[in-house]
Length: 190
Image (cartoon, rainbow, N blue to C red; front, side, top):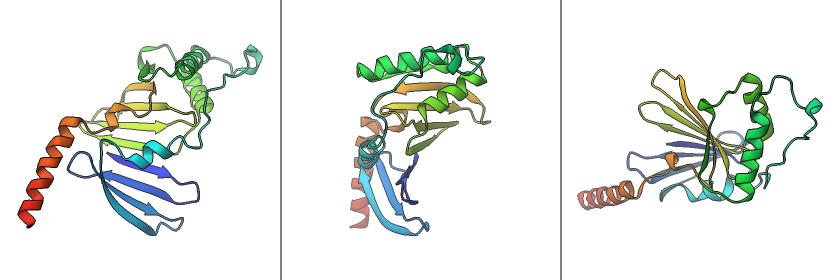
């Protein structure tokens, strides 16, 4: 798992999960891309990203005017999806997923959703048999999660109302295994 966080001052945080799940390598870079600090963290997901991703985000989703003349032409479902996201977010229903792949949506809908939700400060890439690209929106606790196969074809496109998408987090089993492996490494180096 790789994470890129925009600090807003031209610099950014790069965080990479090591070969041990749940062991994260942090690197801070300034506006000139010069390293400023490095550290290791052991957790299911980096604490900094949990705290900072939505720190300056819009706290609630505001729906566009209901006047159909103000909406772009050709929309099929996007306004109703925004209303569903707003309801889920306002009621703090964590873990709600809207599967965009299964819905009748066109390019106008997807562009409208992208414009209304905006782009947040955090982008995550989880690699495996394919890639999972996770992007924070500019609205608190709303993530755009896209799964691609090994040929980089989009196979699942979702919007999630959640503090952190589970696909990016190390499982408790992985953390326990990493603890054993770290102990073995420590013993071997002693």
